[in-house]
Length: 210
Image 1 (cartoon, rainbow, N blue to C red):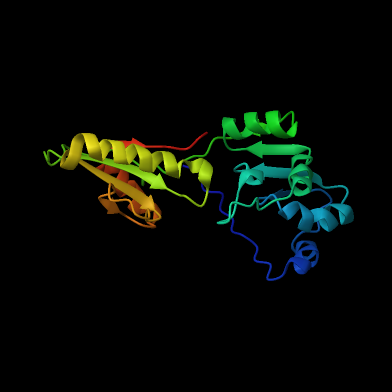
Image 2 (image 1 turned 120 degrees about the horizontal axis):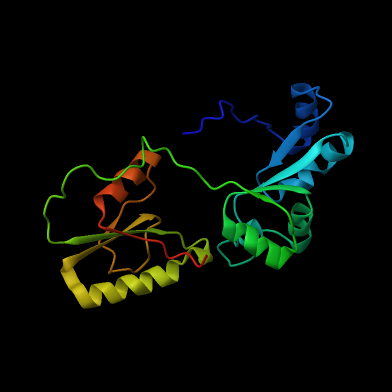
């Protein structure tokens, strides 16, 4: 279990970023992680004012693939390439690394997989309640199409048609529209709630394209 022992610095307005960072650290050398790809635009004056700092970027996803509800990309090509050009990269998944190398031409990076808290996420203890219904759980996130929302609904419809009431088809996060196949939408749960839902399920489905 890893606890960094630090918290975020709240900056009310982007234009205050340079001033805030200057007040926080007087170090001759430092590392600054931008956790949103569009943040590279905001950080440009910080880099210019502190050329002695080693620049680093944390890749938690391929944010250049994000789209809004209208299906439009939320980042421009210019913004994506600016972020990809940051020389030092910490990436949290091999698929993010490999797709970044393929699509954006990045080379060296350090991969540190996402961890989890075993005091929250742990296998079920004891036997199940003996119910005949098989509970199947998946995250449904249609606002990020590559998370496989359409694939999941198609799969659930097929399972419902084949097995009927013998399966309980459940989702986390958003409620599917016109999805009669879904038996239960748990909605947006806390970390403990997600862990509990996964322990109660027989099968956990990950429909993401990656």
